[in-house]
View (cartoon, rainbow, N blue to C red):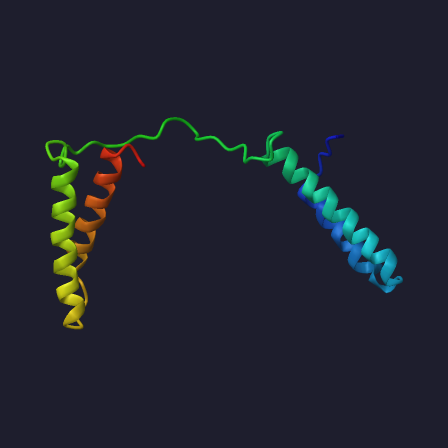
Length: 122
């Protein structure tokens, strides 16, 4: 497949030309629209997909995780029990028709994150 290197302005001018050509018979316009679509699809495939049609994206450097040590001494069971208690507290607020405090929601999210991390993101 031949690589096409089109700039954004070239794509815009191609689109503008197609819009101007709409006065032509529908068949010609449809052919031009399909050609443009194929060009754009090829650019996307060449730029963002590898040969297996999978996204070809990579992290820019290593992800830095700041370890607070807050949950290092707790087991997964401890964290799950604590999460269950937090969810029960949240449910009490919801049952009373009150808004769950942000502090409680934040703790719930932190525990869910810690559990996923201890399970090695499974």
